[in-house]
Length: 267
Image (tube, rainbow, N blue to C red; front, side):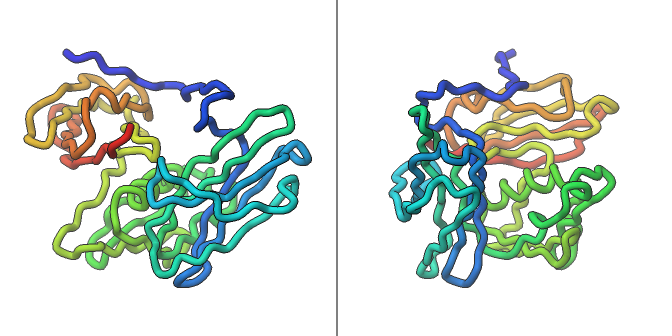
């Protein structure tokens, strides 16, 4: 069987790698139909000597600087960007520290819709019994704790044109971009913003799960006979190329879910 690399710990990047990520936090929010607010919190204080807000149509390439604050050392700051009606934009922040280290934050997409879930208090978000319900007009798609919902939300924002609307902090409505195609990313196996394949099964240690992966022609690629832990990453290079892939999630040899995920180019 083809060897699978399980990325059970975060990958550590050298400080000289261009896409290394530090601890500066960036948030994106829609403030009007044609405006987006980019906000950030600076934990480094006066050590930040340069900070550039950057924008691109692509999540990985062709970023250009659109704003340079006069005081990059401020603990919290922001910038409002006009979108001219175009929502498919990505933002990131490039910043330099006094010791010469420099970082890029992870790029984030300007998403349509509304999301109140970012305002959920930390104690409530940490409560595993607090569930967020995702549904369309007729059907409940999933009920997820806050951590699971964030992963699901990222898949929707980065890999579909569908829109999420928060009705309350625990009730989220999904609107499909094309009502004739109602594909919803799995809440268990999906692509992360870095292009890795996330396996997320909170009850994996209590149940007997098995995973089968197929290419776009539904030819079997490989099987994971036993899920080793509740969440881990599969190396995207095991899938050999970009594109759509299919999977079957089995519980005690019975199919629990059939779905697909997309691995973007340039990984």
